[in-house]
Amino acid sequence: MKQVFICILFILTISFSATSQIVEPIKWTTAVKKISDTEYTLITTATIDSGWHLYSQTVPEDGPIPTTFSFKGNKNYSKKGNTKEGKGHEVDDKVFNMKIKYFDQKANFKQRIKLKTTGNIEIKATVEFMVCNDSQCLPPKEIDLIFKIQ
Image (cartoon, rainbow, N blue to C red; front, side, top):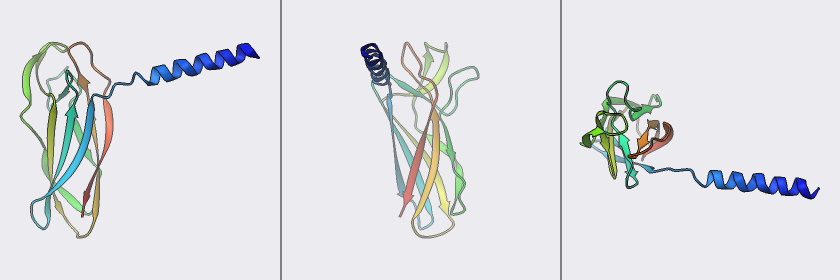
């Protein structure tokens, strides 16, 4: 019985130490800016930990996974154009050995929409992204985003 208890304690200890090593170098936030009575800009901001970088929405073939926004269809609004991104940096990436645009510290993405109705509206989206530092890349990840228009 004592051996079973020790075995369970060992497994729990391993499990806790494994989960404590999860690295999440990007924090995502959302905001909404009113342009007119029917038009708004949905703003997504990525705050990036020091030493890490987030890739652009457009990257060369055979490069990293690009940042991609998917907006859930909703009869209350329509998208106007594609999601725009900030300036970023274009560099010779050491990990992928190619010229790539990426962001460090902070990245802003903007999507313009036009409302088809009035009242409080919640717009749901997903961002898929990949982050790297100079020695490793984390697997691509998806995060759910919510924009509240009031």
